[in-house]
Image: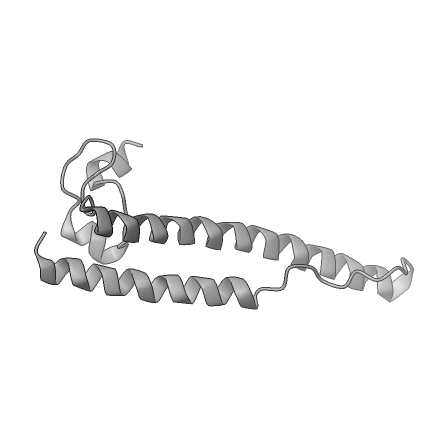
Length: 112
């Protein structure tokens, strides 16, 4: 991979890392659940519980993606970026253009 492409992917990854960190920071951790359990309050608490569960799942997904982005940035630093971690082949440019944090080539992704 040439230096120009490497720099492009690094910039994309740094930008995505900042976006993910902001999304995580802005995502509420706990929603007010209250203590009443009658009538409309019960429905409100059910909505809040659903939102909390959704936020938890979203938070987990964002953390996983952030981990992959950080790993890709580390691979750029250590000179292994763009190499499939499973088979060692070069990861296709189309794969990296779609998802710069990719660590598997197209063949290994399909067969994973």
